[in-house]
Length: 121
Image 1: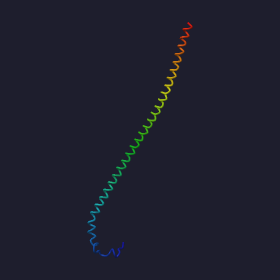
Image 2: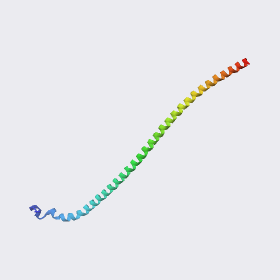
Image 3: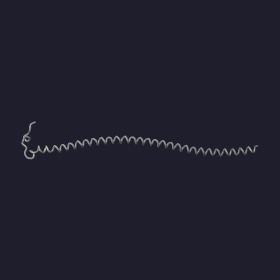
Image 4: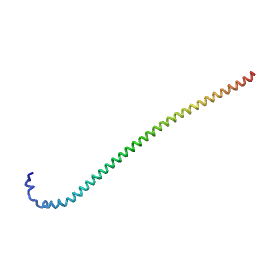
């Protein structure tokens, strides 16, 4: 590369001391580089922790959704069993009433037969 006249001109004034400034800025640059590296490491660790937390959350969510579904199924089964039991109880009450009526009729018939037998004897 060919240097221009401005680049070849001798440095004067503040530019002449640029080498000493550059030497002092190396420590600052090193510190900033170290801070950047530490931030990148922290970011990577935080991202890894966040990913692990998300995975744990998804596993927990999946387990809880499974539990909810199982509980809902059990609830539905129990509701159906309760409805069936209530239906059977209502049918049994009807059967009991019908049986009581039949018993009463049979007892009246028996009394009538007994009286008829006594009269015919």
